[in-house]
Amino acid sequence: QVQLVESGGGLVQAGGSLRLSCAASLSIRNNIMAWYRQAPGKQRERVATITGSPGVTNYADSVNGRFTISRDSAKNTLYLQMNSLKPEDTAVYYCKALGVDGWGQGTQVTVSS
Image (tube, rainbow, N blue to C red; front, side, top):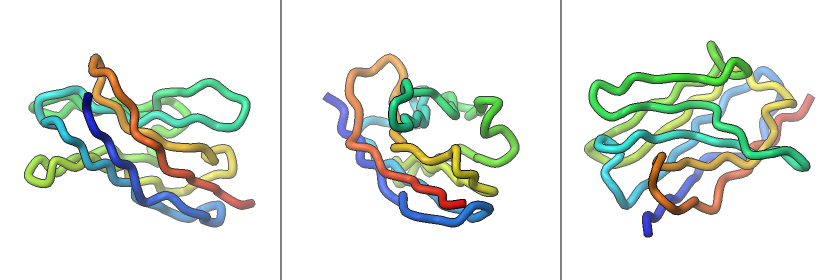
């Protein structure tokens, strides 16, 4: 089973920024990778994806223009740069290899107003 370890979450004020990281045990360059989030009482939603080479990205409307997904293939690490954070971005964030079983433990992001 794939191992995914998310980090970088924390408490930030509205308008602030955070960068999440996800260390993966599989090749992120050869898989479609995604970031999901789940807020209390809500379903898990996908917020960003990046394909294998050439790394085409796609974003949910709610984060488009504020979040950026990227990867460092040499480090086999996926990132999510989150800018202009809003209280509604508060959630546990997870990375995922699409089509591959397994989730990490997630990292908590809390945005205060």
